[in-house]
Length: 498
Image (cartoon, rainbow, N blue to C red):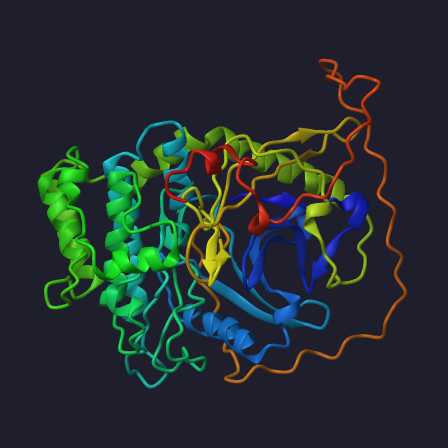
């Protein structure tokens, strides 16, 4: 995922309880996701994704309850195709936070954006493999039962390419249950309030109906697969109102006509998932997955997890290694620094030195988003994003890499982390009502360090300098992804999915 590493020279080392924050992965309407680590004896280190509710929302009961509901729901789902939530915490300095697996890889959204930028396609077999994994994860969520053994009635309600994390390990995972619906969910949706991304909503969800079932996620999955195979948007229009009108009223274009390279049997399966008539749509994600797999076998387009792993290596191998190198360099510098007190509310990862991403799409939620930049009412985007570039500094040769995460349409989307392997989540019981935050420890006077001057550049070609008559441009702090403008990201500029 795109990670903006913290500048330890300026900010020092930052901790949230036992988790040391290393950088910012993504930030959206409700929360920010950080790359974090836990260290131990003999050089032990494990990476996590730490999702922190924004400070200005910590006192808003509705948002706190949504945040804790997400943890309570997702923590009960144990499946290799679902990003697990491992811990829920409350810290007097930063408020409520969730800890998830860190998944090294990229979102399906960014993979589609990358393909669009290079005028290529995500191979049909790879797109199908990604969706088969996603459908299995969704089915596991739909089958969740509560403590009494009754069906929990989970509906994700925000299935979209930016919420599908494609791991470098060849496994795709569904993430972000932030707006999921469940029978026992405390934070009920108000009448007339839409949650999710309109361009991926089932018609019954877009109409604001409360009686949603798992078939809404079947429809959304059909939209994702249609777009993945056609390499174009299905319902997205210039405005949310126009998008909504397309979802509800316009005839759904035949995949076979729009993308004649897609085998007829596969196109037929996708179009059934997009039936507006609930009685004609697949009743479960498992049924959809079975039909898709059979069609893929018949069409010789069934890729394995190993095939997906190989594809990710070909597409992202160099960038993933750059990111690993940057993280190793950051850790080497951090190890030589003293451990300070806990992180403060004013944590600003963007203060870290960064360089523009080489090829990145913006997730607005974006397809150009893997964290698409979603628009919550207006906008948000984990979403989850993995490409990057490395800046080698003289002296420590410390690498920093930045990749801006992108966003697209819809409700709040928060990217989850990326694991190096699938670990069995440790289920954490969350109080039904938000517990009070721990009392803060006695205040300690802190001094904000003055940023150290940038070190001299490493030996290399002489940089081009502006004429003496022109004043040096003033360095400005990078803006957050949600405010990123078109033109800052090559993938965003060429992204047909915005």
